[in-house]
Image (cartoon, rainbow, N blue to C red):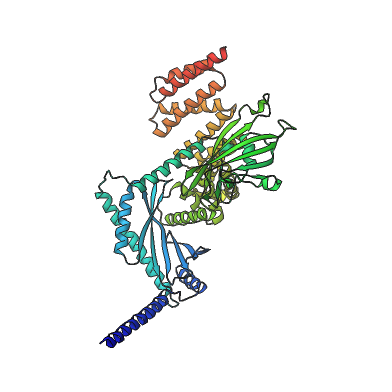
Length: 567
């Protein structure tokens, strides 16, 4: 009996071992890559060529990936080094406000459970306060029918997208809000508030102190000090890095000092490496020749999100002596933005918008201003200059925007006589953005010719809203620069509009413009020291509800100025 039991036990154990061996071997074979990575890349390229798609390949940590545009959608295919499966992702197929996060989350869970292959995931953009949804699927490439497989999978993905849109619309009509705190939403909202606070601070800084950098365009320590201290003669001798719990290090090599970036102390490859560091900088300048001067810079990390990180640099200039009047304003604090987006990301964003704009144009659909500006041309390089220049302009990064806008402007100038309506619109918008950029940098001499050119737009059939916008910026430039033409030009505009108002009712845009001109005219009178005339005009404005608050504030300010100058 015992012998029989032993024999049975041995047979069962042998069977288990054999099963495990063959099952593991079969499993290994089923997940193993049937082709080399290069062979798989060739199969995918042929499949994409059948769809008239031109992929851009990049190496990743786990393999290679191809990015391409198809039917105005941004797609990415990833080929792993080890897995036989290829992943296909439809990126940013849907976006909505952060307030709809709960609905998006629930729908993603429902679709992921319902579908065997297509999975929905979402990502949060705290800076823009939006939620993006992406679709991810997998398939196994085959030599013979990979084109058909890819087309079928993309049809499935588009079908999934359409179902998502329908379900989202239904759920939004029946959504029930609760008072339950959502930690993910709270975190995203905090990230957005942090972003807005720092961007608002940057926006209100003087242009020369509005610093932004990124992984390929860094802010040098020497540039920072010269701008902050308004001293172009500074020459740095040494930099001492004082880091808590770390050994201090000193940089004295001239080349290393010249190439030293402030962000290197706390950020490496787009990742925060420490919270704070102190730099002790020794330098010479022409303000006190023959003296070695010292400045202490405290660099501290202030948080950020996916789009940008922020850090603050507080500079203290150490006086050489009690009589050192050049160090009377010895402490300055500046916020600096470190953008996380790469050149490739900006380029992919452009490609998506450009192709979508051209498709809308061909289908006679309404275009946004951004789409109008880049849709007029088939020349990719010029369209990208316009896109990138406007992107930087809208972020108030005027120093960076000007080179892009200037190239686009010169391109359009050379072809002006052949431009159609959308090209002419783009030309005048380039002039407006260049003029506004120079105006913000207080380079009024360069700004005025561009802004003067925009005044022609009214006679070229441009819409009235843009025509008024151009006139406003031209007036601002004249007034802010103290140009002698400002008083006559503004006075004549006011008379023209008021005369027109006697015969017909003005639109809201013209009324707003008239109020703007009256306020600018008051500023011209005050700048010219015509205080009595300014007071008369302000008192007349007290009966106008739209200008009453402005008039009261300016009258109070005018009285203070009179007392100040009468002493």
